[in-house]
Length: 204
Ligand code: GRF
Image (cartoon, rainbow, N blue to C red; front, top):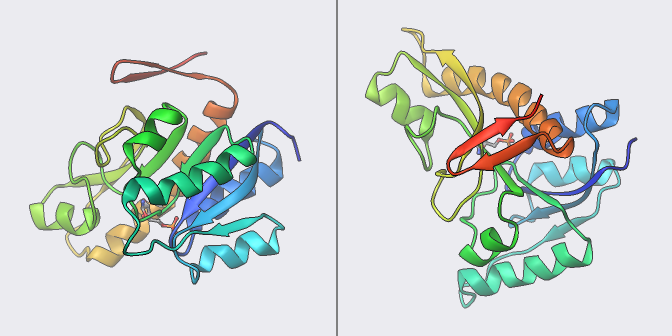
């Protein structure tokens, strides 16, 4: 395994994007190392995969009394201790505090199951179907202070079929997520991405 950038992956659920990225790291195509998996959900299935791969896991359950900024302060101290250089959101269901976004500006990636800026937020695949679009897809972007609103790194379109349900469309989009997310992480770890305003350029 190549050393490279020190990565933290944030998950809340099954973690299939996390696995797709980890597989590429194991193959040596990504110059990075996942040194920490953060979850807000102690029962996230993705945590078992992390433990099987000897990756340290940190579960941060949000207390009702915690404000968003207090909650993320605890996570930030863990990230600092581990010298994290890149944060990958992979199905993490909490909106980050502005402070953590500023601290890791253009070093936090997210994947969204729609062609942004269409259908941000939850249930993106259902929103796309209900709207009647003929193409949806997925988007990898840098995280800013808004919801799914940061500069776009990569997108892949998926055609909507007449017989699609939320599940079948989500499944086909997920296949593409597993392609573009590892690729975007690879570009980041190779220092190939530069951000100018809203536009992200890939150096050749
Ligand atoms: C994916 O559809 C991703 O686009 C969205 O949350 C889902 C996470 O799936 N942000 P997984 O946990 O990576 O399998």
